[in-house]
Image (tube, rainbow over the protein chains, first blue to last red):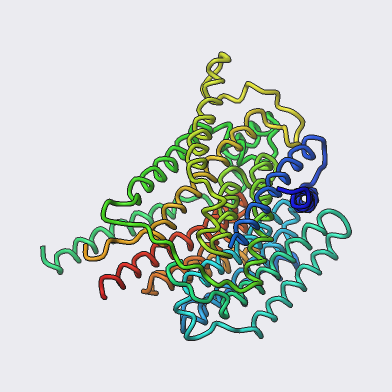
Length: 60
Length: 150
Length: 246
Length: 84
């Protein structure tokens, strides 16, 4: 993996993470620290799966 | 009984009743279209019921259906693709009518909710519902080509 | 036994059942009455443990033992499917031909996959606060993964779905439910008693003692079980072929 | 009058259940069944049981149709191979 592809991967993951974390903040009703921690972890899982799915589809 | 519940009742009796009639009779192409439209109608009535009962937690039901309903239609579009190649299931007039109804319901609920987190959530549900409905309609009218074995 | 005789036996049994049901209907309490002896007690117990969603309190606190039984049923059902739908000796695997999917459908699948996953995890995490819980959220999260099959092809799904990992997760989640129950015994109270953890503040993510943890265990169990179950069905429907001439 | 929505939801459920029995082809039955799942979800909601409604919607909208349609596809493929 060259520096450029690593940068692209990081950008893709970060974009998904931000979008999904915002989605989590929209879903919940009251915000506190634990909600933020759980939301950040869930968004991280979602971002990893989003990238894995995108790579699996454009494999060929 | 308030106006929201009345609207949900009318929508269910009219829209969902029509969808039930469409899915139980006629050629396969008509049945899958009716199945797709039933998702939109039921999801809109669930959102109206959440407002009518004044329970914001009930919006989660609409959210779930807006995410999973189009997926269910994609299941049929994909696994019935061979049967649907002969008569394409295209009913864009009906699709755009439902999209209009859904958009009207979501806008009315947003006005009732006022600006805030609840309004953004309603808009997300509406976007998922309308986008899913359109994509599912596209999938039904020849979205899957050459499904052999896969 | 002749057809006529069998019909008469059926009519006799049906008439008896109908008569009993009608008789029972006359003794039913009125629709939507104000007296709910069980409901009042369940709500009181749930509020005492600061669980906002009473249904979650019933499922994972007051009747947690029943949920253990339900989880075992799902586990056993999936185990049975895995055994029944395995690849036989006279069958072989055939790579399916790739499918052409319209571009909007493929993009929709890729966009909604993470959104549906986050929705499922949201429903699991907020089981003790709003409608939902481990079962509902687990099903949504597992369905989300199969958007890859619907929006692309089975090969794409197989590349992101290591089936062995999901089988292990299924068993681990089932075990963790048991371990959480046994922790109550070790702490000196009863099996699955909700006395281990502080009850927290009402209507926050950490309220309800062990309810969120049991919820998460059930969510993991159901999500992995559904993925394993659908994997067997997909294998049979898409890949496994009988040998020619057998 | 306040129970009108409950009556409508129950009637829709009864209609969908009857149609699911009356339709004979398994693929078309799966279509009716997915509608039945939606209507059951509405019934549970109007009876103020959103947890059960959520379970019904989660299982009935995508998972059950997928399982049934995969089984239908397997049976059809086997029939084709046997016929050739």
